[in-house]
Length: 388
Image (cartoon, rainbow, N blue to C red; front, top):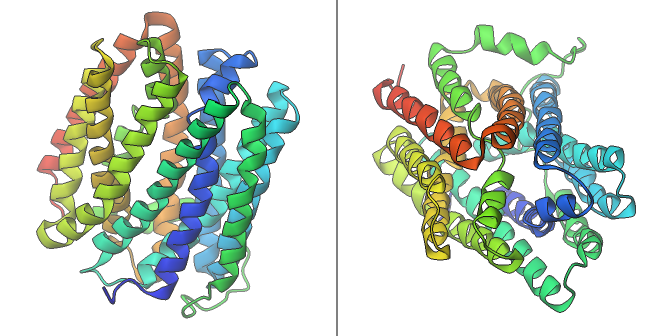
């Protein structure tokens, strides 16, 4: 596997460690927030604001990375902010402080995403994009398996001791920061310019981007408008009667399937086409959300989270590989940053809207609406030409 270069391995290990830290907290986040007085609606708003912050910063810093021709400074700063946000969550429980810490974590993600994905793209060829992004997602998600498993083990020994987990999560975050110093920019991706960028300069890329890029991103954004935070899946499992251990357990199971399937999905996508794998993943998403509207035993939710892991493996890395194949190499960070900027804004709306619908009409209606709109998006991609 010569296509897995040193840079790809280092970036993948960094993502693994960062996800150990983040995902150690993610499944217990809704439980923790509810324990300190957050309602379902407020949780939705919190997740939405955090994603909006990440989104806007992804567009700006992705464009800035292309503008100055550097990647590694953005990667280092982004992972640093995410690491130090973890212990901050344990210091105070005031809502404004929780909002600040969560937003800092997402800002770090926004700073690093475009530059990191551009580094991955620079290390691949059009024929290996699927497997390179798939391998990175597999390693990233392996951290999402390890993190919740450690949380489950810890809470088994110290039930309800949520605050200490936020402090423990700082350790793998520090290790990830150390690894960023083994990264080097492969080559200048553009000549350094003296002109200044405004925060929203990246929006110009939409107008000047290839037509196929706009078609692809438009479909992805409509899908994102109904694809709310995974927190709601965990809340649904909790509502169905699963205890804390079982809720964390199904989340670990989902990430395990995601981690195991992402790399093979990437290899398969390189062979039979990125679009075919992507639309298959979308159809699985429709099945999952329709299934979530049906109450069943814990095995039912186990099946749904299994399918959800396959959906994630077939779409998350594949969509970025698809975008990077369309964009000019000198605009890779901007192309991915612009997409993820709009994506995060849509996620903010999706999370707030899902929280509101759940609050007013119940979880069943919220999941059925998501399934119906997602099926229409599935049809859109099925009919869309994948090449210009």
